[in-house]
Amino acid sequence: MPVAYTTFPAYSRAIPKPPVQPAALEGKPVAEALIASEADIRSGLADNLLRLWRYGLVLSHRRDVADDLVQQTCLRALERVEQFEAGTRLDRWLFSILHSIWLNEIRSQRVRLGQGFVDADEALVVDGARDTEMHVMANQVLRLVNALPDAQRAAVFLAYVEGLSYKEVASVLDIPIGTVMSRLAAARAKIAASVSGEGAT
Image (cartoon, rainbow, N blue to C red; front, side):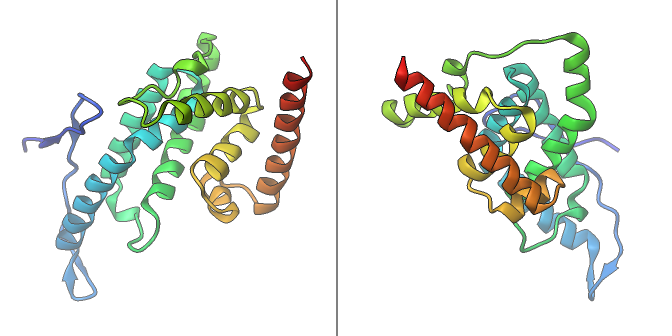
């Protein structure tokens, strides 16, 4: 059976369309439900590509790795359409997929290869900045966030950059909400100390 491909504006590589298996669910064929859900997810993926890329960059510090994370996230989301619960936040589900891919596949490769970091000044230069002042501020924040330990960095990005609730962050990272709060408190203290140190120089 030929494989249909769909491309997203921010990326040139094609994403394969998984086959749909027919069945029955609540009086409606699952095939029909999955087709509708897949259309929603494809549209949602296009809307969330930049956010996913930024999260991939925060985790990996590398543009190429962030690209790979986004591509794998899109592919896995389309392969597992039936796992998405209608009425829930698509972005949280996508962040969870990306985080899982990072933990299970990408990070171990990066550690073995000893790859380094990306310059924070270039980190958010994707599709242009809406506003120069906001862009500079975002780079300053990202530089501080990048200096945090891995666990704190992911929690801070999801909570303060992406605006997820503590409960949603806990769900994405698969940790207790108390751990999220602890990591955020430690990260805030570290960032505050960094800002104070810069102000004193």
